Image (cartoon, rainbow, N blue to C red; front, side, top):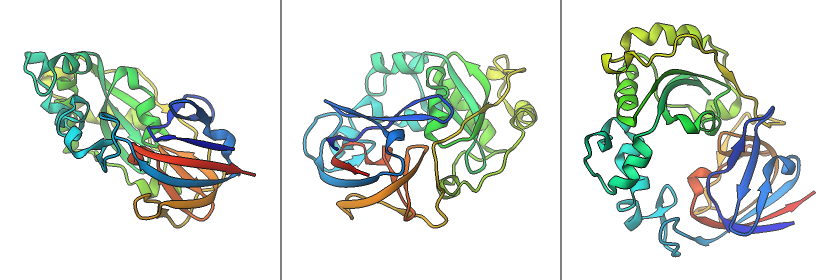
Length: 265
């Protein structure tokens, strides 16, 4: 079987285990069905997710020019405390910014390699946790806009990590934590503006990933340096494909790359 298309973030479905899909323009792949099969990945060209041109991808699937132009790549995406739509102030595209920023957001704790704090739109729960490879997560507050979520995250960063160790996550070098207890401990650090939105009685969500074999040593596949790779797929976690030889491929980091995928038994 052979597939060809531009890579975008794998779509997911909450199940036991998580179900993964690669969606191309004219086709899609149920990635779980490829476990224990040999996959050959060949890099063909670039295709910017904004302009569609064969221009070198700079970040997040966009060429250099579009990365600094499109609202989907503005600074407030990575730093939600910079959101200004609630003040009616435009960054790159106020209509887009209002659509995204002025909707319910949650600040959460997720445990993938360690407990970390993060922000996402309510509509992206639990997708965001799955993409991070978290095996457990819990909401702390649910606020009406991105700005309030952002300042809450900033306040909590002083007391808990905000980054994931992707190597530990992929090796499954993890420990279960009591996220309810940790959430309660952090309540005292929530800004006054967001304190009324604290979630008191929820339980953590547990997530299982489709992994047959975790690697002990990791080698990251970079399609710009290695344009062709072949290996047996042993797992999917976060947005990574995990292969038998310890090679791991971050699909999301390769958005905008046009590839050919050949699957054999």
